Length: 294
Image (cartoon, rainbow, N blue to C red):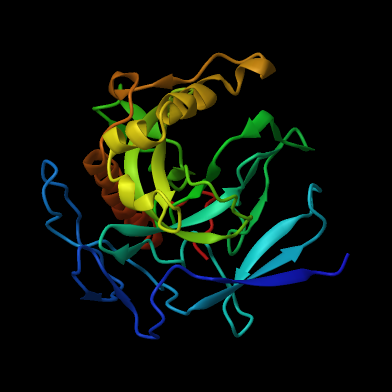
């Protein structure tokens, strides 16, 4: 099958200069990394780290192979046709609390698509188990994907969440807007809360967010607003991720932090800390193992 390509707008700055914004605080792009800290819900004391961030208004999405086959890959390319990594090269934050979110699994679908963190340029592919393509037992009801330039370090134990270690993946996002995204879409979102899922002993954060393009985006700014304007959604997300492995004979997943969604401030704390972990990873300050840093 011939490779197909489509072009999408990146939710980023159109300037060619490399910069990153955090609460309107620009900084020069460097190879070094500053430690990032979150101070009891107050303004962040240091800036997010960004490495080789793409600030080009367009990124091409190139599909190779046929969907729902073992060979299917969704690669990201810049406008010159050079492959880039959706995990490492798409910037995390755009300023004013707005983040890039990459859709891996569109809402109302069941194929378990994910960034291939161990393959060069980390394309999106369908996950496999014992050589067979993986599907959820039922459709996911929200757009699901990742925050670029984040990483849940498997060597770090989180004392606030039962001492669970990171799951060695980028941070997951559950986007609750009404529009159904496409695989590879890059959406501007704002975080609203965080669920601390514990999957077979590993910490697997779920950041609840909404696309800025959603009609209700201006109405929701924290978990309480979600309950008001999207009643039952937080419970539905938690229950979906708690139970989705049960049909395969596995136990239900657990959740830390009192089994409830934490606040927007806590979600930002998670994002900051996992961005710092990613920075250490790409600097090779921590072992990468089989992860691709290209």
